[in-house]
Length: 592
Image 1 (cartoon, rainbow, N blue to C red):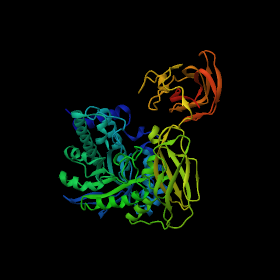
Image 2: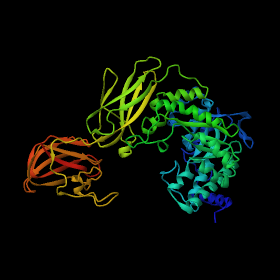
Image 3: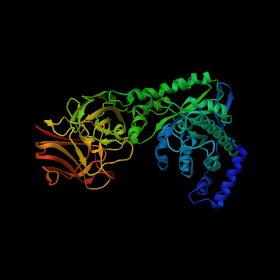
Image 4: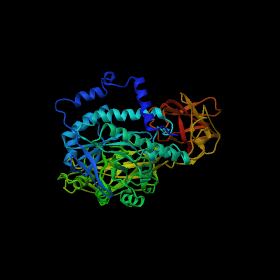
């Protein structure tokens, strides 16, 4: 049996008293009391009255009695940068921003938003937020400590900011109904989702007890959440949905479900990596800059065609990060405007900058399915600037699909007179995202992406080591995929590896069967590489002679022209390049 709302409030009050959190006298200096000092300063302004009014299929949002269509963007920059970026948002015609969390740090954002006539959908984060794969699984059936504490936090900050003129509405949770699918399954999942939706309703009632002037909604990532809200969250004023590639399906889903509440789109933009086809290298095919530009107004048109039900949108995303996700979604990575920025400004009736970003089309990478590590490949694209500005080119690489590192790193490249670019491939194996960035020197950037599959170089000569007996000073026996045996480094399979203990020194030795002369050694490192190591030979496996020494290893593939003679050849690692051990995908010895 689930605890009724009255018992939850009692438990919450009890926890508050025990923890010494009730009353302003015990507030921390940087907590709500500090925020209140600023909020009640002489220049403080009165809050707005926001209402969802109308009847079935004929709703609208009113702010102080006037119709209000949400023309918004999700907010990405740091709060301390709000006054730098909000004038730009206002110039775009944006009247609303959306946040995912509300606490003592929110006040400067609210103040700056109010100064520029922008409203804020103030979010409250609940676990497991952000959809499948998110951490922080919660037992919404039984975990009253978590639910009580989070309800206390929501009440605390609603009371703090309810009179702030920037507040448009409150949003409880983000994608948690979908995210619970990563925590539970079967009948238990259904019970948890029902309990979560019931908890959202409790939160909505508590917020309304404190603030009758602003609506309450809850955001999830797919329309499959709506039946749970319909059944268990009757006191929400409207629904909120994050939808990218499926925005144009929302109306039909709403009509088919017979729902009786309006909705907002709280995230929408280019189709995400979870809903696009893979390219020839097996990675999600990122929409082009032109597709992103055209996608925003297309989504807005579909959404607002649901007149009287769809109340507007906060499109994704006014963010400044320039990493994998930032390039995929952000309108202003590194503060530079893209084609989609101009499209959104035009869509919202704002000021469209006179100077347009460069346009990149038809980006291709020659031989992209098999680029030898450390070699070069050719990028070509059709690049033009609508204003005829001189252009600067830059190439970056991301190992997102190698090791889940979404950062972008500079690539070495040269640009020929015909506009093609010769790019040096990474030394590390796997599929890399390639980014071409073109700037016009006027604050605009065009970005296009492709991928290349980096493969081992073909070593010269005949292989002497594949399938030969291999031993090591140690090997990792436990962990995901373990054991990582020594023979995995000489099996000819780049999908297996040897991994050592996490200490120095370590060695890997292959027995060639007889004394042999070789002139090339190739080492394909996994993430755990050697900063310093030696290639050694021996006739008896006891007395060793060093024939090559590396002191500045960078990982990836080391393809070494080194001559030696011996029955045994080993890699002696003397300094690790990471905090882990040494790990080799392949250790090859070759003779011409």
